[in-house]
Amino acid sequence: MSFCDADFLLSGPVARDLYHRVAARQPIVDYHCHLSAQDIAEDRRFENLHAVWLAGDHYKWRAMRADGVAEDLITGSAPPQEKFRAWARTVPHTLRNPLFHWTHLELRRHFGIEELLDESSADRVWQEANRQLATGDLTARGILARMNVELVGTTDDPADPLDWHTAIANSGVKTRVVPTFRPDAAARVDRPAALAAWVRRLSEIAGHGADSLPGLMAALEKRHADFAAAGCRASDHGIVHLADADVGDAEAGAIYEKALAGTAATVEETVRFATWLVLHVARWNHARGHVTQLHLGPFRDPNPTLARALGSDSGCDTIGDARQGPGLVRFLGRLTAGNALGRTILYNINPADNALFAALPGSYQDGAVPGKIQWGSAWWFLDQERGMREQLNMLSDLGLLARFVGMVTDSRSFLSYPRHEYFRRILCDLVGSDVETGRLPDRRDWLEGLVMAVCCTNARTIFAEPQPV
Image (cartoon, rainbow, N blue to C red; front, side):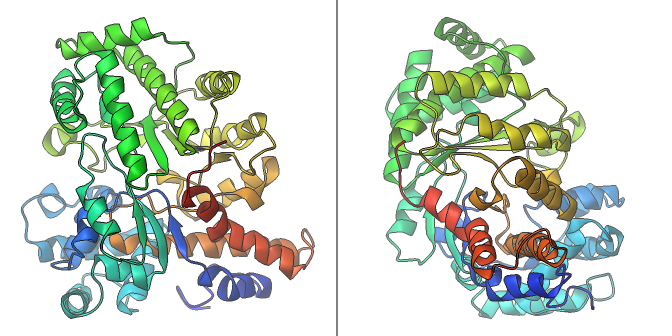
């Protein structure tokens, strides 16, 4: 077998058949990503390979720093081609890191470039990719069409306008693009200046003064309705962990008003306020039939020097080790007791939490909606081959793989869609290997149904239209 060939990651005939005949043909439902709605609305033609591939990819930035690349060649003022050359020099040092696979899958699938990327090939790859970007169909919409992307769920702040989504909806573009409600900025009570600036923006766009807790919730609920009208089907929340406490309105109000007055909340107060906020949004989601997504566990901005210089999302976040179980049990239990638990997807970043996140959804399924509570796809530091295999195996052991909502890119790059291919190959290899070792029967109707469900149809069902429960 040659590197990254047609049967890459597929170890037997059943796996190869399931992938090539079934999985590879399924459209992509990318229900959680960080693509720019503006780029899609304007059908951006990217200036060069750096702009479409490296400019926002903190996975690559992180690897380059580990390889000793100066920051000027990563996020600094160096010319784009020099930054690309620096990445090319790094690529041979990513052997056995998922970036090595993703890099070559992306070059092959988007540009047909099968040459290995390193310092000696960098200029040839740069020139050929730029030629195709300048004249071919590799615009923002063109990439989505070429990769058979059926739905994109962007990640959007309630204080941001939805004009680009309106423009996309009116453009006739084949790919459906919907906003996702991400109110994390409302919980920045530990950063008073940032919170105050965001509150002013929210108040203006919502038409409600958000400088009190009731005002904040009125403004957010107004924007939740606006998002729903624009096609939103989910919220998303990035939290260290949920508090194992019942936080009342009075406590939440005191934390919020103190922050607006300029006093930063403590770490514990921040967690408690965020938990209170997410509970309210989850209730709105339940009423509208939307999905609540909880991304739990990372240490954000632990490097103060990089955080000050570059801000958030610059590639220096890491796996956290907060205790997740007690807060999740209280959160889900409280919603269940109030008949307000809707569709929910839970993502963990620490592999030590895999069994907890695989087993916990089973305690809150209600028998009315298949896969109502989900353990989400292997996320961030876990979305590599080992992490995906461990997630799929643990989910199979403790839940129902057939109801799994499947893969997301969680990416800012339009070239990241081969990650779905990567996931699908791993899924088919797991299932095919089980057939060939006698663990599963060779019932192709069952196997094909499983592969189609996990690759596409489960996500399509959950994110297609509002489905109140």
